[in-house]
Length: 368
Picture (cartoon, rainbow, N blue to C red):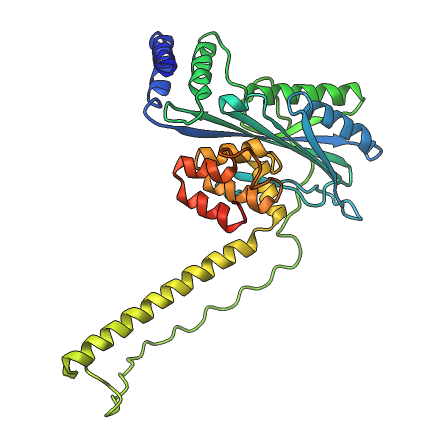
């Protein structure tokens, strides 16, 4: 009944707004997960800047929305380069981007899960890179949003209704907090007397942000002695390969075999192919499990807005049938596979949901 009321309210809310109606009503038949990414680079000129002052400014900005932040000190190069390092983007197991840093002074990351029950989460990461003339702040954010009537989270429809009403009066979703965080960061740096300029931004039309031309010369990969290109090789004339003559007694024509031997030969060939396929599948499964360590699983969960030690998020992943997240929680070794009262253990939840793949995954890892 509540679902029908929400659907009716959502339809009424977007009736007067054709664009919103087209975008929102098209999602009512299924479930959609979207991600937005924001990337910003601030240059901080000055060789005598204090790292702890910059760290305090960044951490305060992260804490504006992400209450649980993690600060890690990096290992910078012994000699600061003329041009600083920067974030690199890998890929999460779920398919989204994953920011990585190497050679940073420090790294701070946090998750804004204040709107998680409505299907919205934001992951923030900041890394500080040194260079010969100062430092650079690299900021990366991933905002994830669930929508659609087919979503298992009943609060998602209510959030869709709220976003539809908010967009009608000029308000957006919680991703606007990213821009507010950047405002807080710039204010903190200015208050601490640290000069800065925004030299890179994605998306470029982020409200209130002005990008300044980067006057730091980039390293030229073409400098130095250029190796002479080798001369073009002489084309090889094609030759005709003659088939090797058959050796009498070594070639068997299956058409000449008796019916019993022909059937036996066919069965043996099928059995050999089946064994080869099974061995290939086992090798692939073994190689994938060896590649993923506990630390890797925890990083993947963090990058998707989850905490590897959060039992409630683990059980929620089981309920929605997210086998990949369940496997990451198990490898991350931060949750209890057998906690809960009778009938509400992770295994019981998986069995009641009818997900036999997750049931097998839990049992294979000691759940009972």
